Image (cartoon, rainbow, N blue to C red):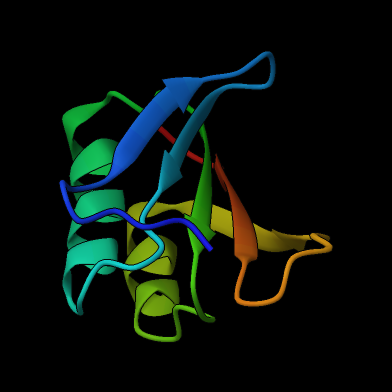
Length: 88
């Protein structure tokens, strides 16, 4: 499991922006993802690496016009959520 004591880790992969928020206390994972989306840094694509399913994030994504789906991982305690903007 990732240990993010110093905050989230953000990087850009071939498919787009990634953010690892595993190990952060609530509500930091939700706030971090929304900041990346609202600031435009995520552009139209973001993969968040989380410790658990982000149930409170889903209505926020819907409200902002982002769809989401899980990406398979083989690590316990690792949930990957792919988010794509559906409208400008």
